[in-house]
Picture 1 (cartoon, one colour):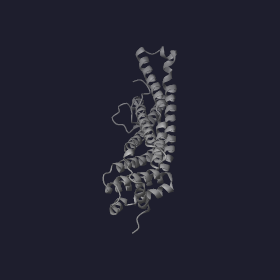
Picture 2 (cartoon, rainbow, N blue to C red):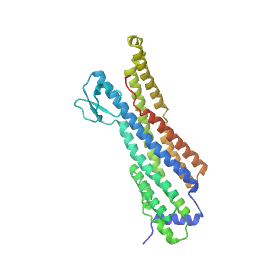
Picture 3 (tube, one colour):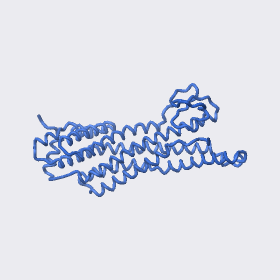
Picture 4 (tube, rainbow, N blue to C red):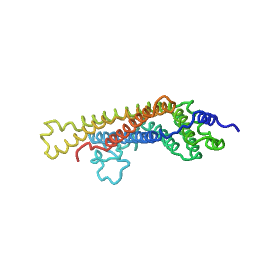
Length: 331
């Protein structure tokens, strides 16, 4: 029975190229995978931050109009209307409305991005496993897993060429074939499999990067707009002398503290460089692909991957802080 094309390609490559090893790329691949996890977590935290801000504004609207409301997904709340502005993780709806309000376009964008990033995470995790494998059987299994992962990525963005390459990786059975040949070295196989995998995945990952960047940009902008709205409509009166002259000093300080929290949160949201983190995902993978094809050196890869990992981790940390609810009014 004929061997799959990918096996023949890799076999000839490793026989002709001399000893190659994935070892120089091992740390970079691990750091790349770490960065992908951080970008996915950033996506999740942006979703939480959006949901919290939307609920805060909905509850503010109910309080301002005196609407009768129901509390969804919260238990044991004795006075939900008074608590609506301060409780996290709850949904507040007017009497007669559906239990869940419709998703905004920004929320839907983050849901779509989550699906893409899960695929990239599975792929990057499989790359880590491949370069760390210590026997042919494991390397062969890892290569098949990578092929399946790339197939999912390619299908998600409609890249037929990548799908074909992924199918070849998935069905190669190359580990056992190389054992039969008996003249190949594990490191050679890992290197060529890694090279083929990264080449197959690069174009779809660049497309996913573009989609995630747009999603992050829209979500961040919506958070800024809504936070500014909260400040202007619900809190800015604390700076009005006519208002503050009629309230007690203790109440004034409490409300001023809430305004300060909101301003700090707006500045924090603005400082979250989520777009850069997403863009660097694609840049790091592209540099890895160039190096494996001989068009860039390992130093370039290390710089790109480290920049990505650092940017992704910073973005995750900042967005995680913005996801914490801020009360609309001082308790």
